[in-house]
Length: 296
Image (tube, rainbow, N blue to C red; front, top):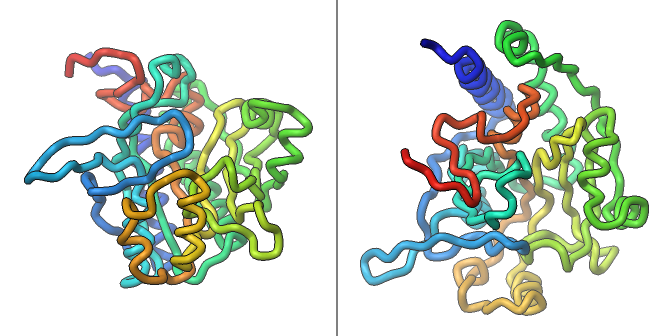
C-alpha cells in the first residue's frame, strides 16, 4: 500500500531541489560535486561531535560542512553551489527538537567578491522562488499534508544579535521564530559565538558580517552564512583567539583567498517548513536522528 504522506513529502522535496537549482543556474552558479571526506573540516562552535575514519595511514573527517572547500573553489569559479551531505554528531538529547538529524544535506553556495548584503538578497530570492514553485506545483501534496503555504515578501525584517538577545534572553531564536509573521534575519553576530572564518567588520571590532535566517511558525533556523575572512594574518589571529591550532588549518593560511560570501541552507529543514511537518525525520526515508538506533 502506498504511503501517500511519505510520497507527498518526497515529491515536494524533488520540486524544491529543482527550483533551487533553476534559480542558481539562472544566476550563473555552477554546481560542484560534494566532498565527503577531508583531512580537516568545519570546527563548529557548539556541541557537535565530528566523525572520523582511518584510511591510507591518515585520519579523515566526514564533512560537517563544505566551508573550506567552497572557499577554495571560488578561486576557480566565481559562483558555485553544492548539495553537500553533512555528518554532525549532535547530542542525543536533541532527538526531540524536531530540527536535528546527524546526517543531512545542505545546499552550500559561495560567491567571489560578494558582500553580506548580496547574500541577504540572494537568500530572499531563493526562498521566495522555492516557496512559489512548491505552492504552485505541489497543491495536491500540500493538501495531503494539510499545509497552507504563504509566499513571503522581500525584504525580510532584520534584527541585530545583541538586540534580539536583550529582548528575549537566551534562546531568542526560538522566540523570534515562533512570533515572526514571516522569515526574519538575525545579523551582526558577536565574534565569540561564531567560527574563525566569519569576517569581522573592519569598522566594528568584535562584530561579524554574518546572518542567520529564521523560518516563522517556530520552525527555527533556515540558513546561515555571511562574509569570510580571507587575509591569512587575520585568519591566523582568529584561530588563535578561539584556542585552535593554526597548524591544523595550514592550507587556509598558505595564501590569501579571494574575498567571498556565502551561506548554507539545510534541505530537510526547508522541506519540514514547506510541508508543515513536526520533525525533519519525515523528510528522509532513512532518517538518522540523534540518539536513535537505526536498522537500515
